[in-house]
Each structure stands twice: as structure tokens, then as C-alpha cells.
Length: 253
Length: 216
Image 1 (cartoon, rainbow over the protein chains, first blue to last red):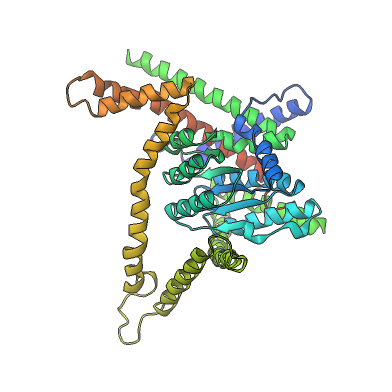
Image 2: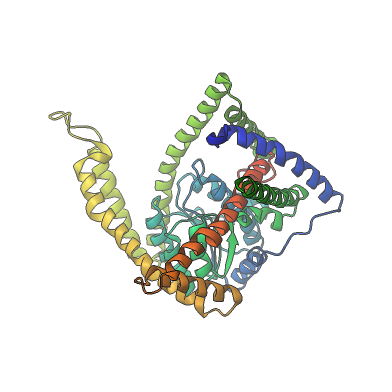
């Protein structure tokens, strides 16, 4: 961006100024019932099924929010995982389903514990909260993957939901889950890791789909509006790329 | 109680988040100083979280030992190793009085020895396993008979053939480069653009208090 004289802060400000009005406009359209159809994402639609299966069998569901923490470069991905954990904790607490939450960054430990504790209280079962449901495995990605592989190998799980920041170490966990036929829903943003996820998980949340979990589960107008704004943004970026490509071809000729 | 449990944390999070964002976007020195102060506070809290993480590890594994779960011997081993390394770290935390120039803390030779001879080889071993796991994942994928699997199989075979054509078919390396530089790169950029837009909108939802895993 420096090449065209724009700082990262300026680009972020422009992006915000473009996206925010679109978000307000589309949210009002969703509120008025004029828009709001979401495309199907099988991974997100299967989540209540995974919780239900855990409730029927009494076996826990594994949840991972990735190897990142809150406060670093992967905060957005970790936050997406924690948003999903909030939904899963509510559904699990409503049908008394045990969750095993594995984390790799200590900053996530108190947040994840608080999410589970509040879900238990909301559903009138404060004694159902067990702080050892959240397990801090290791802050090093490979050590975390080895620890989670052990959980997937030894615990009688019905499913594994992993949404957050993952790297190459994902394969250790993904292949262990696949070998044990644990139903896996995995979402991450790193394109190189996504290829590995696609090869080993049952359902994949590709890139921005992991940020859409709230809209699919809570369906608030502003959440649906933000997904529509995202789609508008994508079309706008695609149009700009095509126009610039044509312009470059023409000026070269 | 609602104010303490819901309104106050949400208002604080929104206010601090907006302040740091404005400090990032507008080049005003005072805003920048206060924004940096908030970020420093977050770093200190994160450092304290490591202590909470340690307590969590001890609690989880003591639970395993108390309940005699299937894996309780591993929990004993883990706790012994944890406290042994912690003890070494605490003992070597300050430089010795005799030789102040000797490194202390994480760079002390004792901790370096543990890292080089225990941690690094174990990590390297797991890293080496990834090649075999990739092969197993590919095998699993190619057994699935849908259009996407067929496309992935054909593309993988073409890229592999381009990588190991030994000069027999010059077109294969060119085809491999084209696959990697055009469709694969375009797909990756598409994903990254989507992630960038998703991150911006997730940030806005967070700043508006729509999604707040930190409070009711």
C-alpha cells in the first residue's frame, strides 16, 4: 500500500467507512423482512446435530478454539472460535451435554471457563459447570496438537468442533479424529491449512465462513446484515480487480 | 446486578475497543499514548493469564489422578516434569553472586539443555510425522467419490508429475507452475480477501457489542 501512497491505517479507515453504511443499510433491510436468506453451510447446520448426538450418547463433544490467543495476530480467528463456543455451551447446557474444550493460549482459559460457567447458570444448573472441562494443553502449536491428539485418541467423543487459527500441526489432530471416525467440523483461515482440513474433516468452514457462526445460530438482523455486507464487499473487490486488470491490459496494449 | 454483569463489561469493552481503533486511525499523539497504555495493560493481563494456565494444568491433571482415569499415570508424569522444570527455572532465575555474567532465566544452560535435548527432538519428531499424515489424508480424500475429490486428485497428480518429470516431458513443469501461479494462487487470494472482509465485519460486530463472549 505504501507504493500507492496509502498507509495501512488509511486503508482500514476507508474500508470501515465503506463497510459501515452498507452494514446499517442491509441490517435495516433484514429488519424490514426484505432480505436475509443465508446460503447453506453444512458444517454450521450440523452443529446442533453433533450436540444432540452427544446428549443421546452421554459422550462429550470436543471443542477447540485454535492455537491462537486473544491479543495477538490471530485474535479474530480465536474470537470466532469463542463465539461458536458460546453457542455450543448454551446448547450443551440446555441438554446437559458435556464439553471438552482444549486451548493453546493461556489468555483463552479464563474466557472459555467463563463462557461455560455462564451457560450453566443461564440454564439453571450452576452445579453443572466443571472448570476442568477447559484444558490448557500447551502454548506451542505442535505440543498442543500432540495433546489434543491424545484427547481425540483416548476420550470417548461423539464429535470434534475446531474453529480458530491452525497451521500444519492441524493434521496431527485431524488425522487422529478421522482414524477414530470422530465427526469433525473444522474452520480456519489459512489457505495452506485449509487443504489439509478439507482432506481430513467431515465438514469444512472455509475462510470467512468461520466468522458467520453467530449469524447462523442466533440469526440477529445485524449479524445477517453483516454477512450480506460481506457479500457486497466481496463483489465490490472482485469488480475492482476485474476493472484494474482490464485497465492494465488496455494500457499495456 | 445486570449493570455489573452485562452493561458494565460490554460498555467497557466497546469504549476501550473504539478508543484503540481511533488511536490507530488518527495520528494524534495523546490518543496514541493512551491507546498504547491500553495495549500494554492487555499484555500484562495476558502474562498473568499464563499463571492461570499453569493452575488449570495442575487442576485438570490432579482431577485425573484423583478420579483414577485411564490416563492418570501420564498425569503424574506430566506434573512431575512440570514442577521439575519450574524448579530449575526458579533456581536459575537470578544470576549467581560469584559470576554475574552467567546467563539466567530461560537462557540459563540448564533450561537450554532441557529445551535442546527434550523439547526440540520431540517437536522435530512430530514435525516429521506430518509427511506421513499428509499421505494418509490424501489417501482418505481420494477414496471419497465426488467431483471435488476428482479435481483434487487430477491436480495433485499433475503437480506431482511436474515436480518429478526428470526433464522427460518439459510441458509438465510448465503446467505445474501454471497451476500453482494461476488457479491455486487465485483461490488463495479469494479466501484471504474473504477472511479480511470477515475480520473487519466481525470487528464491527464486536465493537457494537453484538457478539460478546465476555459477558451475558
